[in-house]
Image 1: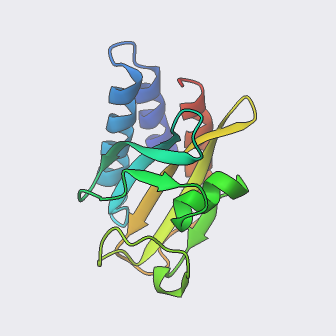
Image 2: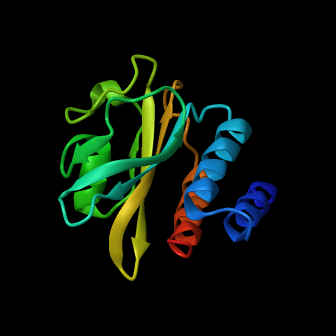
Length: 149
């Protein structure tokens, strides 16, 4: 994980790319390096609306380009301000299905000046794949991403 963090840091610190390009590169790197990350993307608060808008991502196209607060795992994290790990999406009542292949999901909020401004959302085709190391790395990443937003 240390090597992955170094590579993520170098992407975020790169003066050659704008923020959107950096976030896209982050998604690509996570997708390449962690085999059970099957859809990796960012959602951000849509202006002053109580909804999320899809940002850069890697994975199958999704119909969920706008997610109202409270809907699905991402919408719940926008309201709760807490990381949400779903080991088995079939057991979640408020799950928005992006793909029939998705079996698990993790969503980690991004805070800027104490305000929840977005999140990273990762879907997996594997049941219960997310480790404590994944959680720690993603929380670290969201903190680092907040610095460039």
